View 1 (cartoon, rainbow, N blue to C red):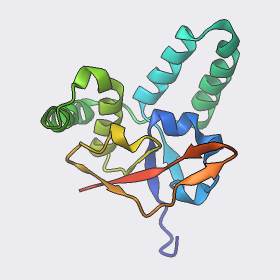
View 2 (tube, one colour; view 1 turned 180 degrees about the vertical axis):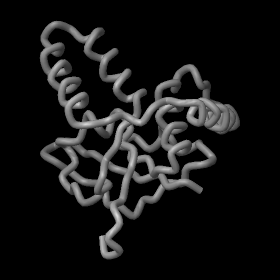
View 3 (tube, rainbow, N blue to C red; view 1 turned 45 degrees about the vertical axis):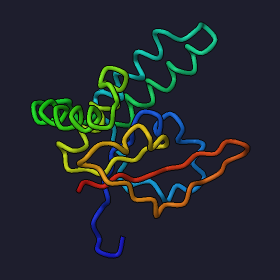
View 4 (spheres, one colour; view 1 turned 90 degrees about the vertical axis):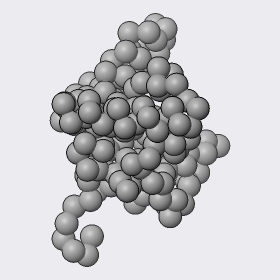
Length: 153
């Protein structure tokens, strides 16, 4: 960046899982981060996967543990879940169906970080996040992966 500052950003779980399918890596933050909730989702995915998928998911978990120091789900993030839940309720959605997404968004909000998501509909109803669709969706192979940055409002 021209100012010499490093752009930090929180990758939601699906974005982390789909990293190799994002052809334009310039749409990612300079310093990608994950939350403890993302680590929990990846751990849970390993445990519920069929035996064929377990090896792949185990490698992904090891990669996460080696490459990232997850942002904690702390008291500030817990308080932010209330704001996220209220936004989802106003939009007619139930928090229980999106509990992990809500906690990832709340952690990003509590840490004053933009959130990067491949499935923007998971986060568009959250009042404190505003989607920045200036990043062009990318195509890799036959898979279409749109990366949307959600900035704090």
